[in-house]
Image 1 (cartoon, chains in turn purple, orange):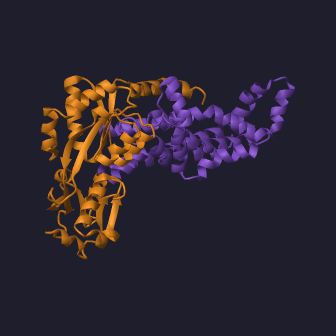
Image 2 (cartoon, chains in turn brown, red; image 1 turned 30 degrees about the vertical axis):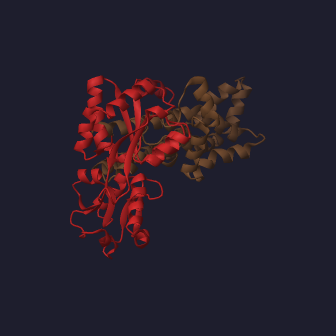
Image 3 (tube, chains in turn orange, purple; image 1 turned 90 degrees about the horizontal axis):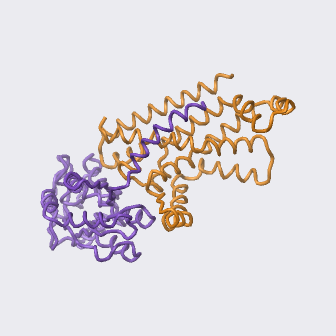
Length: 221
Length: 250
């Protein structure tokens, strides 16, 4: 593998990992709120989070681009206050990956949390445990398989992301080029050797991740 | 599970620190300039120690990215129209704009492809697909369409056109044999071993092809961008551009 190809693979894996870690705290909080609480606007939030699953990724990318571009409402504020660029930088890559993979984490984590018996949580409460302790010492450990499976799926989705990434982060060699974008570009340019190498690597990573998540979901604790 | 992020974070931090190093300029340049600019950039980095990063794509794509707020310092377009768009949006530093290069169009076929000896041969039945940069937006396609129209061939060929995302993608379609012919720049055809130039379109017959470059007004590193632009207009760069077949505009 050339240095360039290696950089693309390392960059994509790093971005997907960071994206998955970034959505972990809000994703778990959201999953817990959806699984355990009833609140006004719940179904609305639920639908919004699931939107990236069904909306064409380029549309998600377009929304992010218009929002965060230097002349967008959020982007112009970031530009003027912090001189911070988002679009067409690695930050945009992470952002696109996070938004696209959030539903995978939230849906899996939610199902996993719902499976945890509320009686066990109640027992802990009656023994005097505050709500955060119940969550971290009862709910989370019991739901861990589903949550890790959700993280793996989110990671795999992030690694395969294309549409939103190319819209909001473009294809800047060494800066924003991810595996999928590099594959697309090399197909366009007819660089078959590179295409197959990168395609093989992405398929291998996806296989391993999916396999792990299947194993986790099958084995009940 | 909770200890894993702690191990990973420093590693990721290092990776990102490498990516975020800021003393460099980003040049958004037309796809047709890929090989020449890469060579010029490498030499420039060696002699000046300044880092130059390129983003090669169709000029219309790049212009759109710049309008959307992409962090670029210099724009090197394959046509004047895209530069004019940015000028109208006040996105270029006007006094830095200069026309640097010229180019011309050629008709290409795969190495063992159909024979084309004159423009009219493009209409023969054997040519089912004619690969161009997207004639609605990509400069190479816009130029090709202008020439086909002036040659009175556009009407006849319109339905056979396969539009590509940029000129290099248009060439790749011919390289793979998926199109029987294509129209690209002479400089592109010169670097491919899988296509042959069937017909050169004389500069007098074709549209005037001009590559302008300018520093962008949103650039955070205008001085370095200016310096590189100056270098692009200089003697050393001229030799490399000439080697790849670009013509000089004075």
